[in-house]
Length: 290
Ligand code: ADP
Image (cartoon, rainbow, N blue to C red; front, side, top):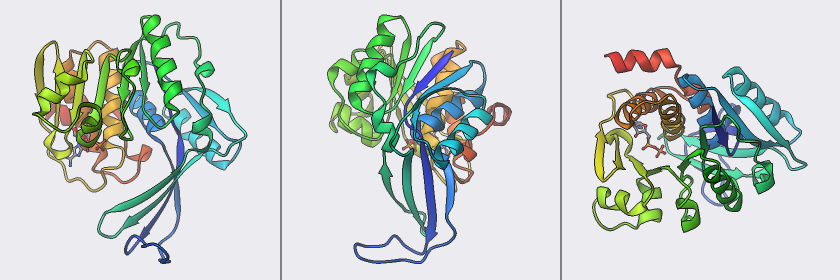
């Protein structure tokens, strides 16, 4: 079993001609409210990838956004451990400009209430998957508890921030994009040198349309990107992480898991939205076979 512990947000998205500058009001298009949050996106990706049952620990308020997330995760087949809070469900206020640029304000809400004592029983859990949209002390406590019980830990160090060494000590697989890697391992030296400096058994950097690179057992593993017409890169990284966890959980070798995760990430960029853009296993298999 895979357990994802992390954030869930309702994304409030409005398209507009441009991102408003301070003090400016812009008239945009219709509001769409869609399920998102890095943790929930990764749980949906892991469940759609198949191969391992997926559960998620998340904190939700008592509001319409909570219902939206419960439905999206439930429809994907994710079993839920819900911590119910008095705070509202997390929200992301997203403006997307005609240029494709976006501006995002996140209100963590319930996500900020996820506490070290909320970790469920880990019996039967092979992989714990986390991100950094929930309190860092909770992430550290969960990672150490997992490590102590022989559960493998995959940490996506997103959004970008420095992390305490005690956290890296409890991580088996670290996934970062370039900006996130710079905060963990500094900006100097080659990408491979920086991956090696992270110190986790496996460290992976995703490079958008340039693919990804992993460091494992003293050697680099490269995986190119799949050629697709990208229209919305939202949740490409989340799709990569969730799919990677599912592939590793079913026992794929690292090189195969990177290939599958890259195919899923590429497909996610061909569709709008976060969870709605995450591909199903047969679509990924089809791209892998071409
Ligand atoms: P993040 O969104 O976290 O910054 P990336 O942009 O690096 O993450 O994307 C994660 C993965 O998704 C990449 O390693 C790649 O496999 C895939 N991907 C992202 N953008 C593209 C693209 N334009 N074309 C093909 N694959 C892509």
